[in-house]
Length: 293
Ligand code: RIB
Image 1: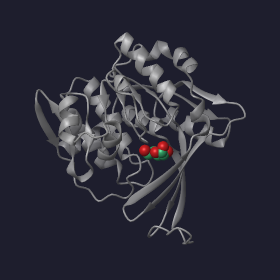
Image 2 (image 1 turned 45 degrees about the vertical axis):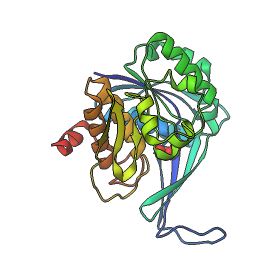
Image 3 (image 1 turned 135 degrees about the vertical axis):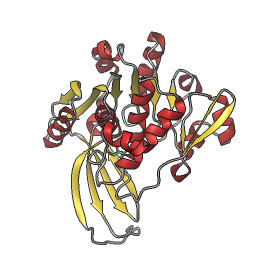
Image 4 (image 1 turned 120 degrees about the vertical axis):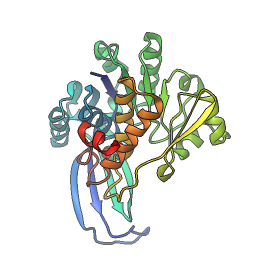
């Protein structure tokens, strides 16, 4: 069984569904409000666990109702929460999401996520050192990601960095990451001034560029590949990228080829968008295997 450790954010998603986007300065009526567990880190952990991996989550929540909800959701998905700290007096992270016109917009309040520390990484090192893959995103302090990448590189533990929301990362740190999963916009920030072909060519077997409806591109042995996605009618795309990352990590850790791992992840992401909420639509292994048939 693949061992995955996710070091990252836990948020409560406060989602409003609307017929259309509100213009600046305008008030409109929403269709409904949903409060559900999310956060890029927790979402990736849930995706990987549902697809059969043994998963541990490393992160922080507040000592509030939201923190309890998030811990319950992780535990319900058989995720080890020994290293999810409940911080006294702190608020849990929240994401304020609007879903409209087949898309979403998200504003994140980091709160407890901003208190994930190198000390917590050291405390969890026992499980991190045993991992087949460690997953990182950009919703905890950048200094913690740097610490994890350096430490894992020295110990030979593979790291997947999902650089969302995007922020520049020093090239020497990117060099130490095993897999990097930007979309086109994120890639343009991380590799300023370089075109897609250059980015893929210079980072073979590392950069996995998600291109929305155009599928996913990567390069290997001097050749660029494009892995097509699955066409579905989305209900809510929140968490699709996280499902992709969690699923890719599981498939790759289980020894599938790059192409097959990406195809597996594409199928999982396509299934995930068919329900409202980041985690509610995330598929189980059997669902993905069905889809791939
Ligand atoms: O990637 C989707 C996630 O981004 C949401 O669940 C929200 O919490 C934000 O972190």
